[in-house]
Length: 325
Image (cartoon, rainbow, N blue to C red; front, top):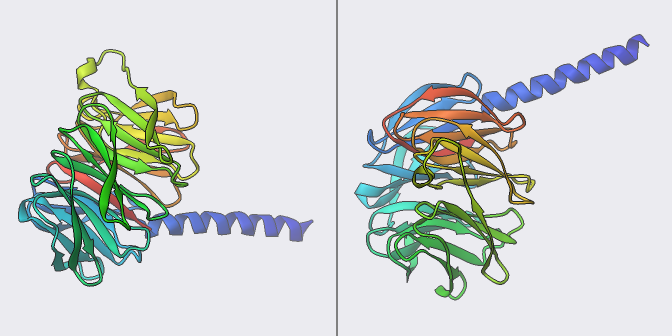
């Protein structure tokens, strides 16, 4: 009996230590649009441990596949900067095209697909050679970007055209377009690639698109008691890997919607900071981070409990967020 009890206690201690170690290893990076900086948040203490100077008007950010570098859309510098996370230095720029705002990294980590808002173009950059592989004309004011898990499709949302443009990555051209709600801002494929979720800021909706047919199969609408409909403006979207939830940032409504990703029903609205922009999940899917532009902070959400647990002050107008760990 004693041996069994001891083993149980040891296992519980090991699990707790493992979870604590994972949290400690996590680092959260936040781009501050007005300060030209990145805030670095420690995943264990949930406090800012460093501020890194980067290029002008940093917005979209994403980690390299090996987690050693961070790609940064320095919009007003018309460049994608590559930050070495060990030295915390920008080691070089990639040729991004004009005014890069959002981008997506291909599944193999070799290509960055970049939206050039001012020139109505998507630029595809070969990361190893640091050269432009090709460019594609899309609609007016391209913004949201993603790449399907199999690497076949690159997708772009154009704000003024209100379309999703389907780029065949092998053919290097747009082969289809899907009409969605006004001012589409963000796009994300499900983990299995069968669906694409697209937020429409002015439309106040999220469109769920079947990848095979490239047709809208469901439109999710949002209603928050006491908040005017025109203030409910969906922007960032984050889907859990298990297909359970879709989290949707609702901009000046200052809430994140929790959507059942199977039934498409809104389960809850979580109050966060002012003008919530983008979202990022930790690798274990236990925690969700939101960037709140006007209040200059990050909200931390417990995914299992669906509750905001903490707010961390960062720089001015936080925009993008990425989690390493």
